Length: 94
Image (cartoon, rainbow, N blue to C red; front, side, top):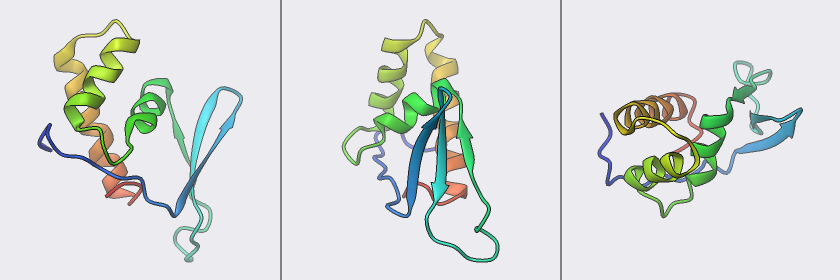
C-alpha cells in the first residue's frame, strides 16, 4: 500500500483527451508494445487523475474524491490505492 503522504507526478509522455464524457489516457511515446495503447478512465478515476499534480498527497486526493462523491472513506482509500497501482504499472505517474 502506498503511503497516504506520498505525492505523485503525471508522466509528461501521456496526454489526455475527453471523448463522449470519458477521459482517454494515451502514451505519446511509441514502442512496438505501446503503439496502440489507450486507457479509458471512469468518472472517479478521472477525478483522481485531475488531482495528481505533484503537490497533492494521496490523502488529499482521497479528500478530493470524498468532496465530490458520497462514498465511504475506506472504500475511496482502497480505490485510490488501486488507481495508483494501475497508473504506476503503465508508467503514467511517478
